[in-house]
Amino acid sequence: MTGAYALHALPDAELTAFEHHLASCEPCAQEAAELSATAARLGLAVTVTPPAGMREQVLRRVGSVRQEPPGGASTGRTRHAAVRARLLSRWALAACLAVAAALGGTTFWQHQRAEDALRQAHRAQRGTEAITAVLTSPDARTRTAALRGGASGTVVVSRERDQAVFLVSGMARPAAGKVYQLWFDDGGTMRAAGLMDPDRTDQAVLLHGAVDGASGVGVTVEPVGGSKAPTSAPLALLGFPA
Image 1 (cartoon, rainbow, N blue to C red):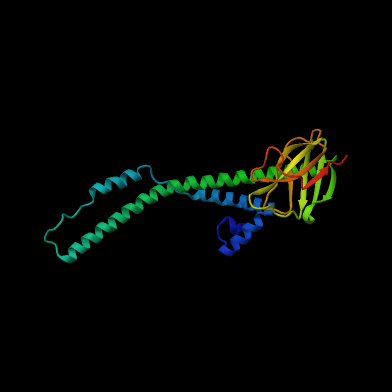
Image 2 (cartoon, rainbow, N blue to C red):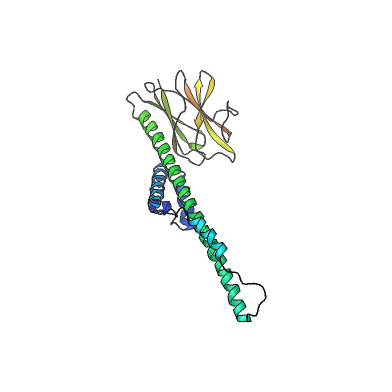
């Protein structure tokens, strides 16, 4: 459904269901972003830029439109026709001005959409590549532990790359206004290592920062946006594998 989603062709019910799916499926989210960028760029390829003098020509025509004087000897039918003609002229003028403005605005909007989608796709790709590099590193070591609520967490550490990845499965969504935050355990001192996606129960997160001398990773519940230091007891604390 990524193609139809990128072209805004999904019915409301399917759109809602698919957007819910996107929140927990990185491959689909990346494909949809790339297809949206492609669609926007195809739109740019056929966009027509209005002539430079179009606005001035329309404004000049305003002064040349003949206006019927009030009163006069015209019949009721003639007056009605004149009024209708003036109204149509005004509508036509408004439409011309709207089209002239919209053509330029649409080009800018499409360009912004394309650039935003490309940046999103590139960020997702870089994140996936960084996680894959840690997971496939020759010196990667793992440790798995059961978390609260039946979830399972695994930490993968590459000392050679000085990086770690936290993988979780079956994690309950945090309460409204809350988010799960990851921390490096530096001998009892917790160092911020990034936030988990509150809408995903299964995910892989590259810990922000170097492993350095950290002995493990912890998970706490924090206000949306994260905290500089833990404000709650750890839900889990996994020691790094030797």
